[in-house]
Image 1 (tube, rainbow, N blue to C red):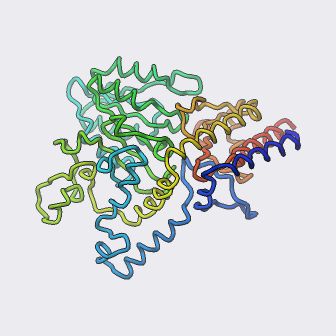
Image 2 (cartoon, rainbow, N blue to C red):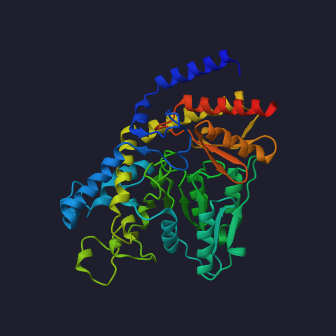
Image 3 (cartoon, rainbow, N blue to C red):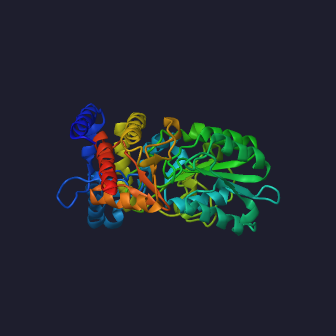
Length: 430
């Protein structure tokens, strides 16, 4: 790319970034630095979100309260530990479009998925199948297969997988809805992702729920790549449950506490569940009775008391989302990803294939990319990007995932990625 053209693109990117009404939120995050002291071009929030500056102080506050107050911090701390999970409830509900009593922060994603399937996967002799994507995240495969076996069924017949039917490995709405129509009478649970981890494709959750419920199937979603990425409306969508992690777009740190949604129609339902004392009705929890009386709503699926040091980073991150507004973040995300998409197609289209759908309604901020040419070329480009301080991630066998997240990424980050791709391509031609 000629120097004049590059300078023009840089000027345009910087001008657009200067006009970004959410630009100041980047300053609330700690951006890693390269060996020369310059900031990394971090496009990996789909794998691990950056640390908010306020996280350290929030954790130190809890450690200080532990030091000063010990057990009394449950009641007298700056954020008392006894009701601590309630401090994230309203912001978490707003983030995913739920009522406050429909959400809870607890455990990890796959633990929550298992707890939900105890209640919502109830197979019988004729309706015992679970519907998933063939390319679902491996942990989802492991969880659903183990649940099928636990209930005495064979995944060879009770696990229905939807094959990609579009170029690049994405799924058409027709393929998903067609599978529900074809197999609905024997599906006990439809278990799909909100955003497909490998392709970055966003699914039409409301359409899936309508089709599945019409066939008598229950519906759950893995929202690991959707929470904090899409403007979700879980209550109105009507799914029976959903689970997600908080270390990606929710910036709550490695192994962060996860989230769970249970629709309010199940708030007081007599469902089978694996119970623990923190799920007991809080009004009588400390009477220490052996009989379990579930707290209405998602809280009733809790097992143990809240992990304070894991919830503190989530509390910080959710406060940032509240101030930014998920609607404004999604609007920026659509514009930023469209800019990234157009840059790649115009200036690196001879090198990269974008496998993520082009329509904004069918994707979040992640673009999944394949290098045109031999498979080993993809890994070569990935290594080149990292050597230039451009952090993306790699998924076998040949996918580079790059995610310009709206809280802290800019157009100049997208441009730096594309310029590095052009640089790599030029070296390959020598």
